Image 1 (cartoon, rainbow, N blue to C red):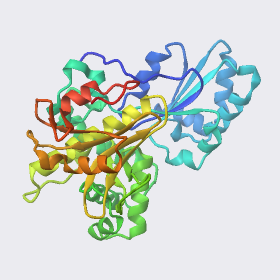
Image 2 (cartoon, one colour; image 1 turned 60 degrees about the horizontal axis):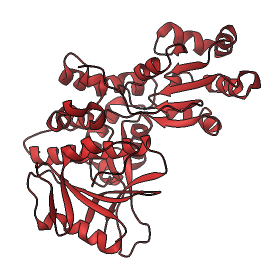
Image 3 (cartoon, rainbow, N blue to C red; image 1 turned 90 degrees about the vertical axis):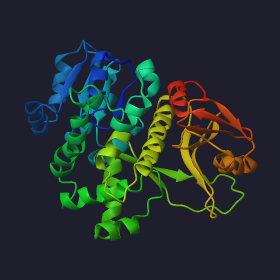
Image 4 (tube, rainbow, N blue to C red; image 1 turned 120 degrees about the horizontal axis):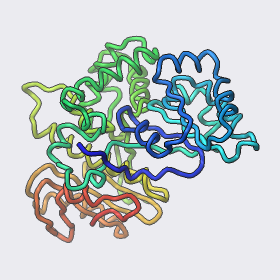
Length: 386
């Protein structure tokens, strides 16, 4: 596959760049800053050197006064480097030098000063590919099977790389870093949580299924989020006119990762898994669009106590959009009923239904858009397609 230009727009100031493993952070930064000083903490020798003496970073900077950009790759492996970056950022003699700290896990940094630096370094995220980045080569069907992680798509054997992806995370991020006492329990919990893809995550039910304590599952979910493997979507409650109910919904950060984790058996229908994959693919695109676009936007869902639900609500400065996702190749009036209910309560909002058909339709005033077309037109900095 030919190189794909990312839509990520780097700031001119110092910043953190977080993203799951395999999203191409290192590749992006090296191409963006060809003359930068690079501290690659995935290199064993470099890791040992900076773990023993974090002040080596200051020595590196002082030895290269002409450098204008310093990249610290996988900074979470040596959290003590944050103190050195803090000192260097505050040094008025080096105001022209900027830092980029990349990481695939925010867990250790939470306890090591990332909040201290948050006011001085911008927080940015890199996501799996968007359809708009891939362009005409984008295939909805292929994306539903393999996801959109660059690490997977550029591999010689993408299905095999995807199978090993979660194992790599469990071995190098969870077990090696000692994040959990029992890696087996965590792996089983990961499978159980995958059953909640696109659904409300009930921690108590997951705990019973995994035969572990509720607090253990809560800790595991937090670890999954800190490792950037998954995220939760909160209920939209602003100026609610109806009784609403619901826990946050859960999604894996990439559809391919979800498919590789999700256990399958005779009782699991392909349609059920396919529907969760499609909804997850839309979720990860909307999340990337929010991250890469200017302004403040939030991703929510909407659900009444009677069970009427809208999959996604994007709410922001100039955006108020309700989106329903259907995995079927045809749509009917009943499929837009929840959107019509939402519009009754929020007439200011725009609404659309995404489905796997090929024709643009309008049913009871609701645009019904082929999902592939919507994703290809979803571009950061531009309004949501309608």
